[in-house]
Amino acid sequence: MVHRNVLDRFSWLWQLLRYIVTGGINTLLSYVTFAGLIVLHLNPYAAQGIGYTAGMITSFLLNAKWTFSRSHVQVAMAVKFLVVNLLLLMLSELLLHLILVYVTHSALLAQLFTLLPITAIGFILNRTIVFNR
Image 1 (tube, rainbow, N blue to C red):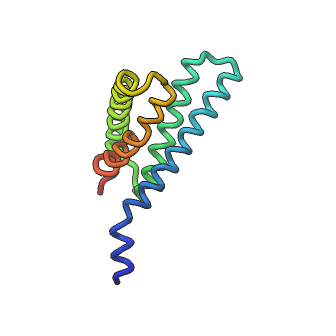
Image 2: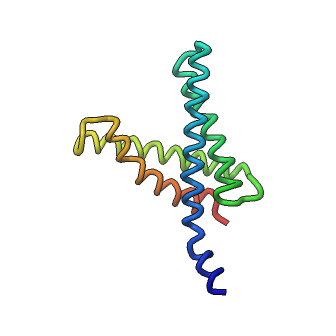
Image 3: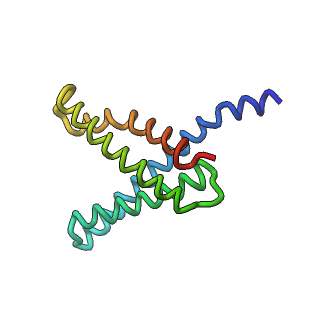
């Protein structure tokens, strides 16, 4: 009984690990889609939009089914996911700006500094708002 109780108490940690793996998968898919479209001579801005969209759809489906174990995907859930991800994008942009102004002028380093807080906030918002039970 104690063993099951301990597992239940740390189930969020397994969800977080799956959330991070899902993020890696959707990032890879976005990049491969983008690169493939560039090889086919598509406009880079169109390729970026298509790649980003492919990554978001993959992220939504994997997070719903695998990370948060939802058996049914609903339109309301997809709308919440879109809103949360747009908020995360805006927050990421703001954080990137603040880091560039006050911490470092390296865009690559500044973007790395945004990864941990944005991932943590994204996990919490997706877990509590989008995929809550």
